[in-house]
Length: 102
Image (cartoon, rainbow, N blue to C red):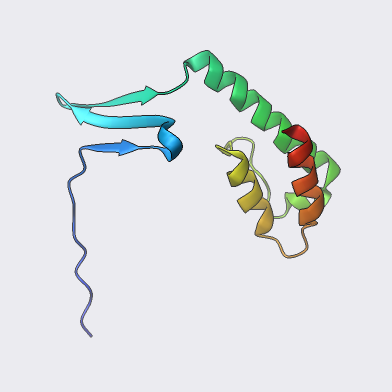
């Protein structure tokens, strides 16, 4: 059996979804830059945590698989993807809660 060759590609920089952040390697260290400052990111993080807590409180089936607040989903889409993994999940209710949250 022949295994496919894995190419190793040197990367100079990584740009996050919609340009929200970028990381680059320079002068021997990794540099991180974010579109929003720390306070803005912390505020949005708290808001996303609140949305996740509300979903978990109002939709008990969302706990399987659990949305880990310690792992901290990074976006609404991550919460939605996590919730879609369970076939018994009432996805409509979760989507409604997310729409209500804006």
